Amino acid sequence: MQEEALIDKNSVIPIYYQLAKLFEKQIRRGELKPGEALPTEMEIASLFGISRMTVRRAISELVAAGMVYTQQGKGTFVARPKLDNIVFELNNFNEEIKKRGLKLQSTILEARIVKADEQLKARLGAELGSSRFLFFRIVIAADGERLAYETKYIIYTKQKPILESELKDPSLSNLVAAHSDCLPVSSQKVLQASVANEEEALILGISPNAPVFLIEQTIYDLEKRPIGWGKSIYRGDRYKLTSYDGWYAND
Amino acid sequence: MQEEALIDKNSVIPIYYQLAKLFEKQIRRGELKPGEALPTEMEIASLFGISRMTVRRAISELVAAGMVYTQQGKGTFVARPKLDNIVFELNNFNEEIKKRGLKLQSTILEARIVKADEQLKARLGAELGSSRFLFFRIVIAADGERLAYETKYIIYTKQKPILESELKDPSLSNLVAAHSDCLPVSSQKVLQASVANEEEALILGISPNAPVFLIEQTIYDLEKRPIGWGKSIYRGDRYKLTSYDGWYAND
DNA sequence: CAGTGGTCTAGACCACCAT
DNA sequence: TGGTGGTCTAGACCACTGG
Image 1 (cartoon, each protein chain N blue to C red):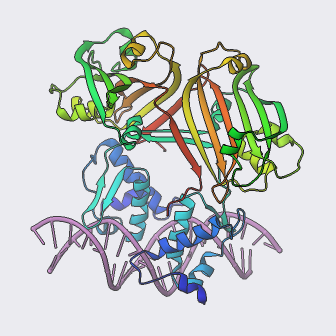
Image 2 (image 1 turned 120 degrees about the horizontal axis):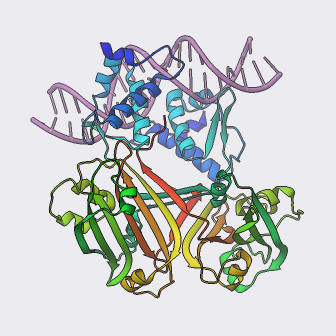
Image 3 (image 1 turned 180 degrees about the horizontal axis):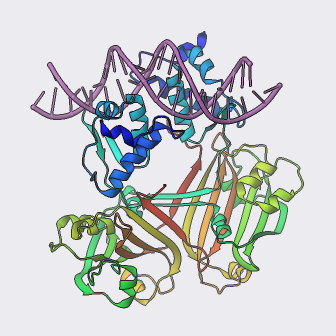
């Protein structure tokens, strides 16, 4: 069968990968349209002279990419791109800025031990019985311009000095890992649109009531106890989140 | 070996799934700590009296969950949770509201054919040579309260009436699919923090300069030509995005 | 070199779907 | 009932890692 020519069994590139890309191209070119069925796994296997398990591995790649879906007892079908999901993904807001070629600089305005007030106790450490916390105020700037302002509280269990590493990456999870015996395993972030208050405006050099992103983050340990809390204010005129969805290109 | 008792080979639950959950529990309980190595695939296989391929399937589940990582020639190791990614995932902002038990209602304020001005041509259809577009203005409300205001433009190629389905789901991708011959395959969304202008404030019943989310969405066809564009304003006091990261629980 | 994970095979039995 | 995808096996060879 001539189809075999499209797959090089002796290539260093895995067969399942070649096969997945083959179908991906057919779908992307429109030769296989949404709703249409792919050949059965056995057909594909004999068509290319390969094992069914290898075919299944290829198909599972396409499933993971959201390009096809399988139905037991029926077959494998080309999916319709789902475009209504918004998936804003960023490795810490700040990585975005870095990629634009700007130098990012974190400055710790303040770092001290504080006793918990009622509000903080409600959010942190209530279950751990701790009442002392490390408190940080941090400003993030790029090329001399201040972009974000963060306040963070973490449970204080280790007696360690502030390390250089924290100045480079004063992220909440990093601070927790450095200053607490707890292992941070999960994190909740809540993103809101807001406007700058007096203090934030002053620090960021923007006018009060200017639009900002507000992110509240809580970090939890293995038993889901909160061990760190932070609030970040990002200048609305400097940050935006971009999300790509659907059948992206990965070739 | 006593370990076999932990896996029921005759269960309707797949072995690979039982095995994956077994390791997941050990990791979550801290019996396997980040950086530690799992037994080798062959060891696990003989320990439980199962095939190596089944072991690999289980491990691949854990890899997908971000709980372990593999290194060829070395072994499989427990990962350290990564908490610095922000992944705001929502099936269209509005699904969030629905889940809170509120009835969502979309109202089309305006729907008509427009000719493209320069600004619109720059964003849409420049490559398709089309100069006529469908224009929508939509308000989304829940329990009588207006929550979001959307304006959308899509290339006009089909001559179809407005369907009921569009009233239920007037999402950009849905509108494009209904009124255009192009197949929408990818989408870009940009999220910004902003404040309401006069028009938006009036429609949403909030004060001007109140904080809002602003999302601009562009939809592309197979050849990456833009075929739809929309701008959505979400009340900042009613919408927030929540992101969970790390080792979540799925049991 | 021995040991690891990565790929692949040629079968097998099953659950599910349609007819 | 026959055909589909889902699971599983018991091998095989490979590329990579470390001593």
